[in-house]
Length: 301
Image (cartoon, rainbow, N blue to C red; front, side, top):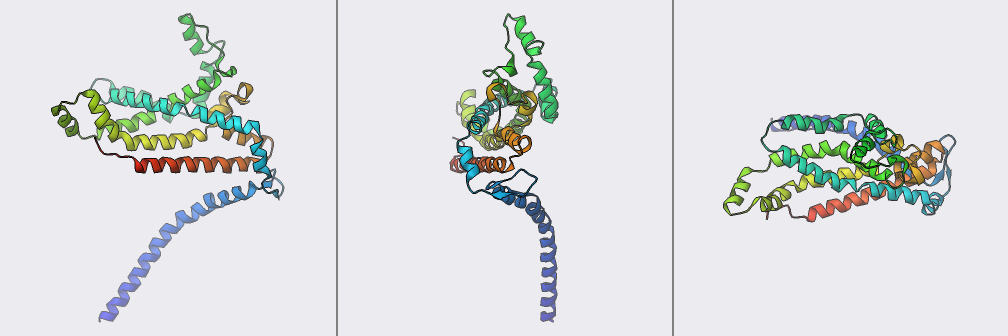
């Protein structure tokens, strides 16, 4: 009798394992087909000369040597890093907005909605609107500056102002998302921590630095990591607002340059080599951030 029960249990366990494997296999197969294979093919293609139409021709490290001597590659990479200045600016502004909207006052729901609307808006449409606003002749920004006696520049046609203009637009576009995350984190901070700190004589500033900031560190870490990954892939804003890469190549991002090489010049081998380098840089930076985060002390002082 016991042997019969054991066989039934073993058959039941096998069926459960097979069912579980079937559920797990679907996303694994999808990952291998749509992510794993393209990734391996891109790595292989980076060692070839390929125009996307004929068969790839292996050329060793020639693409990487060309990349090292390509001034446009280094300028595009520098432009991409420069435009990430908007990440800390966006963090500070979104935290200030979250602190303001975390208070009990009339109209908070309205303002939360207003600040979040750009996040769900089409990036292409937003980029076109800002392109009009930045117009040197009839743009809203220069019209507003003219009201206070300031003669505004032609923002997107000036090498000195093109990148800051795109940074401002990108910060405005993503402000609502970071604000919403900070707002949720602020509302999850236990109130008794502030009450205990107030009893001990801690003022609002000390409560902010020793309670609020440590409790927001996980959210800040998430926003920084995702913002750097997204900032490294900035493309649509550049391609719409400055389709030629800006004056003196001043706004060309690395992804925009990869796209130009791949689809305008049909130099797929070189483009994939740059993509591999970009992917490795993003991976290394993300790994460093995780290591720093692991070593950080999230305890409340």
